[in-house]
Image (cartoon, rainbow, N blue to C red; front, side, top):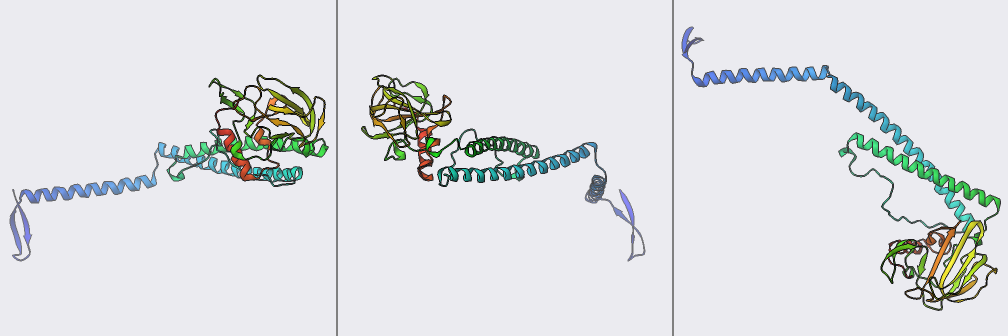
Length: 320
């Protein structure tokens, strides 16, 4: 194929043969020009016009942003409430026990949901949902703690509660956290290696160690038996609290006797079904078993209290 082009030097049209290379170059230049024009046109169209799906996503994005901001504000308010509750709790503790409360944190399987990881890598739906779940859990906990503190305020203002009537001291002395045994919960028995509910805490101390009452009250039950819990004493305290001291070697009180906090009840032994000398100690409120370690805060420093709590919760086998 021949085409004519104007030659400026000769001042006339001269024939030029079209080669395959020249044809391909022209085609490629045309294709690139069309593609560039299409890209520019699409970019301008995308910036100016939005599809129905894009508009729907934009509205959803705005709604999620507003919801996240509202939940964040709610969480801030709840955190402020929790902070105030903590201040009230410390003030009540100081008034009741004339000491600063311990500050410990034990992780459990059922903890509050927390926002972790890189926020930028999380989907917005996940962030909103996690924040919503967290605020609900914190708000529920704050409400429960507030109700408890209100009950404590009522009791203290009525003058019906005395510090000495709360079983807040360890019933054996001297005592080390390493002498803490299994506490309340499902534990393995030492004799049959089966799992059963353990209703108290084992304080593993030498035989003959003096056992003292953890609070003032009245002795309501004295048992001398070579089976089960062996020699045991039950003391009734104010506000529906009871303490039980079992596996004793000797008993120094009698039924109906009024005792003070720290009064000698007996001595540690191995009576009944007990693997080794220890004191099986229980705290009950209204007939419901309580975690005894929670009542030892009055005379233990925070570090010792924390260590004792960890050992009590992680020991899987009881002594009886």
